[in-house]
Image (cartoon, rainbow, N blue to C red; front, side, top):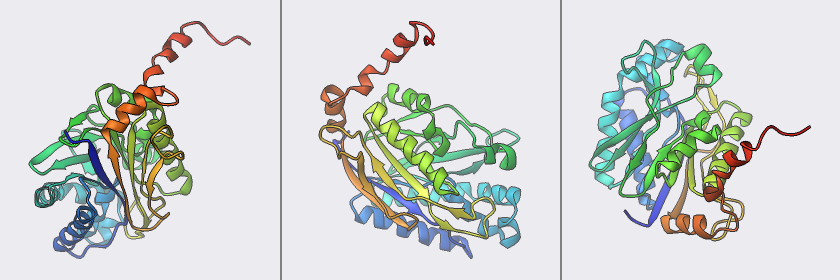
Length: 296
């Protein structure tokens, strides 16, 4: 594994696609620009794949169930397109997540990690939002995974998952040093929840979190008509790191990338000798809780 890893997290707009070649051209442009900026790892957002619903036409894209099924139909071709670009540029790509029927009656929300030599694996969202539960009926998928890549051990916490500290902690205990947090949020409040969760995960685990978001309006796409946010890369606000914990950040609600180079050695150093040692002291919580209930 290398020490320095350059990450490009996308603030990604959904665009109407008149055909498959349009999608391939867009994806090639985005990955190419990230690679030109020196990226080793390119991160796309949650439900960024929903723009593929346009390939079914306006009526399909505007229908919740129709959009889900149309996007899932293009998964094999999307895998192939990502793999070609990963190999051509020598990068790892966390593809935009989307619905996948994986043997169940309802889809999971899946993000796939592509490497220059093939698919590294995939991560399914663990905890569904109200919209996913009550309207799309998307279900939790397979277990949490740590991806042992040549760049670093990686974990993925998709959007709402980033707001639950025990999920991220399980990945950290499994060896992850960099967490990827793809998101899709309709409101500024929703974006802020993922942002605050991602920054908290970087603080308490003394790790790096790369946050990629869908941005902009797509009134033709059911469930993703408007998305707020920006891309950012966070670290622990501690010795050797920015005091704000923000390594890079794109402008709010504007397409583009947040790009930062992070050091695995710096992660190890802050865990060993930071001003605070949250990563090391995590287990003390259980010991303190075991002393009994709070006194009135």
